[in-house]
Structures are given as C-alpha cells and as structure tokens.
Image (cartoon, rainbow, N blue to C red; front, side, top):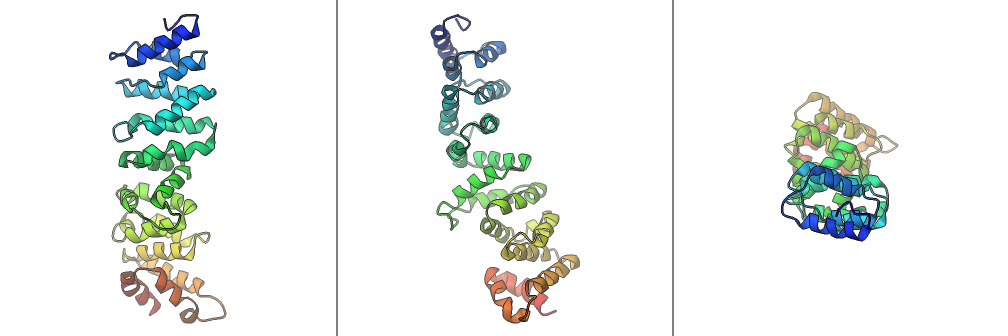
Length: 276
C-alpha cells in the first residue's frame, strides 16, 4: 500500500505504519521520506522508531523538505515533543530544520520546548559550540533573561559552568557576541573555577578591545585568581590603558571599576593591583 499509485492510499498506509508497534524494514522509511507527495511525507513525521539512527535519518530528511506541509509537521513535532528523553534525536533534526533555511524567524518557536529542559539546553549549547553559530546562544539568553535586562534564573549559567574547561573556553567568545551583560554574570559566577580551566579564553577576552570594559576587567580579575604574574601584569596594563587620558586613573576610573566588580574581588584582587 505504501507503493500504491494513489497518494491518498499511500497516505493512509503511512498513518498505519507509524502507529504500528513493530518497526518495518529500514528501506520502507527511506522510500516514504522521499515520496513525491508532501502529504504522504508529512504523515511520516509522527514516526517514533526505536533505532535512534533511523529516527534521525528519516526525520532529518523530512526536515530538509521544501514543502510547507512537511515543514509545518516537522515544526509542530519540534515544538510539542519533550526533550528530556528525546534530545538525542531531536537535536540533529532541529539542526537539519534550521539548515533548511526556510522561515529562519521560526528559531525562537522551534527551540521553545528544548529550552524547558536541561537536556535541551545542553544540546543547544553543544550546537553552538560545534558550529560556532551564536544563534542558539541568543535563544538561550532570551530564556535566561526574559525581561531583556535581568537574569531571573541562574540554572543555565550553572549548567555552562559544569562544562569541561575546553568547552567553556569556546563558549565565552560566543556569549560575548550575543550578550555582554550575560557574559559578565557568567564570569562572576565562575569565580574559583574558570581561571584554572580556561585561562587562554580569559586572556583573550581581557585583551579584546571590542568587548565592554566591564567584561574585560571581569575576565582579567578571574585570571588573577590563578596567582599568575603574567595575568597580574595584564591587569595592571589594562587598568593603565583604561585610565589613560587627561585625568589620573584614580579620579577617572577607579570608581566605575569598583562598582562593576563584586566586593570580594575589589578587596582581594583589584586593590592590591592598584596599590602597586
């Protein structure tokens, strides 16, 4: 029936196939995923195959479709499926859907379900790290700061801080592209951990003149926690550059520096540098 010349017959057959408790031959799913009729293919979007590879291959093929009937079905599946137990196959399908390029403004809606779970947020972070694309980071930041200004839930920051040091190092410049305030919050909460695991990334941020001074100083202060003379020199240099101008550093910059950093950093890190 799945090979019938009549599309309505094939459509009905696919409905039965996806509802069947036992899987069929792999080739049958491939055939349906390439069916010439979009309504037939749209029915296959409901597939729940026990083999992750077949599930990913089939739905990723459908997510690359050019017909709205298929894409609408894929979009609904991505929005309505929980990521807690399905993240392993949902993530590659989401990437395939976004790579399709049709309706790029849909990303916020497509990631809504993913952002609700740790597993989904982890996959979005992984996607950003592997691709270098800051778009997934932007969606995560929106969930972190729904008001646009204030962080209401720091769980995502904690999840990022649980990343291996190498991943954390790659995360920092991505986050810097999207939201420098969010990056500063991450750096503040990273106290005691990030300095040992991502020193090169911190140094890069501290030396990046495109970053806000608040970000650069936070990164540099974190580096100083490692008790490294090189990083101490970096902070001294950064303070000197920030304070260069007609007014002395003590009058022009120290006040804003102190206001920008946590109290314990001011006492333990910044003041000793300024006293040099």
